[in-house]
Length: 494
Image 1: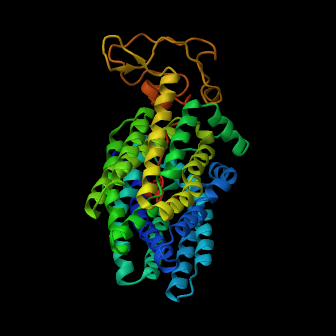
Image 2: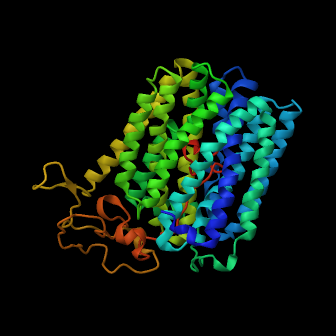
C-alpha cells in the first residue's frame, strides 16, 4: 500500500503536500462561508458563481496549460504557481481583516486563484510521474489522493472552528503559511533522481491531445462519466453549506460535514492504493454508488443521519476520481501526458462553471435536497454510460456456465488504436490483424488488448505498465490547490 514511500523525492513531496492540503481545505471552507454568509444573505447562486470563476480557467486555458506542463521544467512551474497562490491568499486575508472585501472583489480573486491553479494542476499531476517508476504509478496516484483526504479530515473542521473563534481572514493567513511546506519540499527534491522525461516531446498544442483522446474510445467514455458527476454531483460546498443551514448549524457544523465526507474519501483512497492498476469497471461501479448514496443522503431527516451518509458519498467519489485519474495517466503516451492531463483537469474542474451555478439556483429555488438529488441522478447516468459502453464495445459477454457472470470476449478480432501506433514501441501487429488469445479458465485480469485496455476495461498488461505501447504508468493525483475541491476529491484531484 505504501511502496512509493521508498522513493526519497516522493516522501518529501507527500509531507509537503499534506501540510499544504490542510491549509487549502481551511481556506476552501472559509471562502465558501464568507460568500454564503458574510458577503451575501445565504445566496447559494452567488456561491455557485464564485466556484464557476475559480474552476473556469482550467477549461478556458487548457490549450496553453497542458503544453506548458509538457515543455518546461515542472518543478520550476510549481515553484512559481505555489508562490503566486500564497501571495493571493495573503492579499485576500488583508482585505478581510480590514473589512474592505466585497462580493465583486471576491469574484475577482476567485478567478485569479483559478488561473494560477490552471497552470498548477497539470504540472503537479504530471510531476509525480517524474518522481516514481512506472510500476509504482497507480500506487502514487492513490497515495496522493490519500494525502488530499487526510488533509480533508482536518482542514475543514479546523477551518470552521477558526472562523468562529478568530474570523475568516486569519484562516487565509494560515493557508498562506502552509504553502511554505510545499515550496520547501520542492526545493529539497533531488533533481538528479527524477525520472527522465521523454526525449521525443511531440510538437503541437491542444489539438494533438484532443486527437489522441478522440482516438481512444475508452478515454472518451471516462471523460464523459467524470464530466457528468463533476458538473452536477461534486458541488459539495453548495450542498454541505446549504444543508448545514437547513439543520440550523453554523460554520463549525459545515466544517464537520466536510471532514465527515473525508472519512469515506480517505478509505476509498487507501483501498485504491492496494490495487495494482486502475480499471474502468471500478470507475463504473463507483459512479453508480455515488448516485445511490447522494440520493439517499438527500432524504435524511437529521444532521447526524445526513453526516453518516456522506461517508458513503465520499468513498464512492474518491474511488471514482482516483480510478479515473490513474487510468488516464497509466494508459497515456508519456510524450502527451501533460496535454491529456490538462484536458482531464479541464473536464473535472471545467465542469464546475457549468454545474455549480445550476446547483446553486436549484438549491435556492427548490431547496438543497433537490440539488443533491440532481447530482445523484448524474451519477446514475454516468454509471449507465460506462456500463453501456462496456457492453456495446464487446468488452463483456455472457458465460454459459455461469448465469450471472460477465467475462472478456477473448476471441473476437480487435483493432490497434491509432494512438498506440504513435507510441515509442511500434505495435507488433497491423491495425487489421485479428488478435486471438488462448481462452483462460479464470477470465482474470491481464488479458491484453492492443487498444490499451486489459480485462474488463483495465489498463492490463498493455496499458498498465508492462510496456510502452499504451503509454507509461507514471501517475498522480491532485490537491485542493487544483480543486479547492474537487472538493470531493479533488484532487485533487481530488
